[in-house]
Length: 358
Image 1 (cartoon, rainbow, N blue to C red):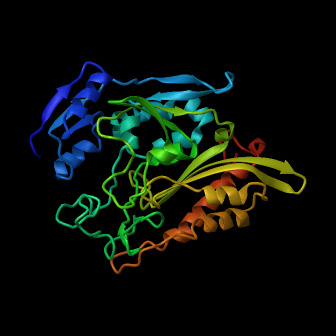
Image 2 (cartoon, rainbow, N blue to C red):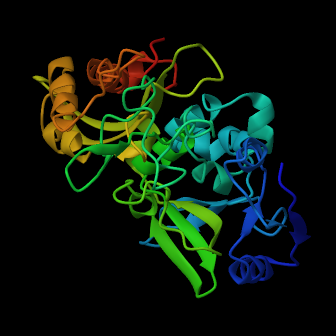
């Protein structure tokens, strides 16, 4: 590990000022991702500014826009385990609680923070191996996953060069961020120019011509909180994750979905729906095309699958002797169908857990 200086600020504004003044400085919170990268040599910090205790570790009611309903404000220092166990999160945003519980071991959830979870970097094996070329580490290098082991890699939104050739197919690893995307979360940020609010749909960026950047955050900007707006649809939501082993594994494909169904004499009809996908892109992928295809349509497996397939029309899987990822296309369609089928069930026929039969 390279030497670095450790510092603590008195408050969030002081931490922002310290990092802004030093181009080699970084914020340190739970450290469950950054410390690994420092050890691997894929991140280097001249100074680590500890922000533990400088942002809120509380989950508070957030007044709604109409002054009646309220959402939640989640402090950036809230631990993943506390967020998953929170009464209102479990009751009103169950997909978020499920995503957190499927995201890591209990020990990691006790350390990882809300702000840090959103800023996780890819777990691409080539990104973490300095002996292999990686466009995400250096724009002067190629992507080793192209033609290499691409089982966990992106099929949507990959970076391309001027000739249309793919450059980076890394995926975003956070389960929580997928659920946050489905919930239209808003990220509160403090920076050298003051506070700003970033809708999560604008917070992450596709790799484009610079795969080294994951978010729109500027140097010195610190996440202080995440707001969840009121979302009645979210009470009937779920997070469905497909992985290579039953626990402590990143998603091959995941789906965060919420569904509102009108029950008509001819059967259930989709009144509203939200879908976000994990394990398929450089960012949590909001499936707007699939959502639009489903609204007003009968809530059937056939329509669920057709909507998912419409979302995937632009998919570009990688074929590789070492392990390609074309299997993700039918896997996404099947996973979306399964998740929405769960949410279509009549709540009166369940034990109170959305989508689970009694």
